[in-house]
Length: 264
Image (cartoon, rainbow, N blue to C red; front, side, top):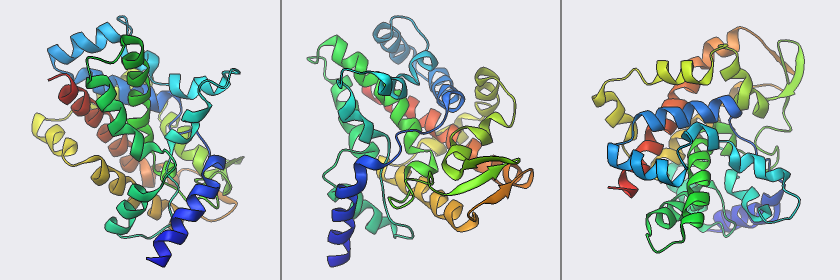
């Protein structure tokens, strides 16, 4: 118990300083496009209404873009994009920490947003904003470096080289691994959506807690496999191509699952 309370104390003290960025624009648009392709007719009608006919991909980066707002209106949402946790926890330890952290985070906010959107008594503008955030945060939940460690800010303080360009391991997972393929977001989404209904259903199984732990397992692997100032080149996208694509598929299909459930 002392270990868990110490972890929670550290997370609360340091959480505000973690990076707010996850999947770059291409990644978020891929996820949104996959999700939109898997909505029921009833759900699509409701989503189209809330988004004024714009595609989900259009709004998929809104939650990151509002960081540039100077009014402070959205400052409280910066912490929604991630969850800081130590490495090598068991699933139950991870969920204990996630459920005990007082600070809002990506794990705590997804169910709240779902409830807000589902509640027909919620003003439409609030439901619309909640949908913007849900589209984005389900993607964030599946970016492994957004379930990262506080001390290195989800890999932002782990410098590496990407084909001789200095960067950090968080940025590599945000965009570099996805953009390496040189697809447009629609091309990549169409490729990743080529699954059978049985395969899609399997990827949609589980709870938000289950999805969090799946992502966290990849996080641990990434941390254990990278060295400070390592020069990442052709072998790295070759090694992690399937991981990136699986996480994009999971995020898109699970976002569709949540929306279909909300509007069922």
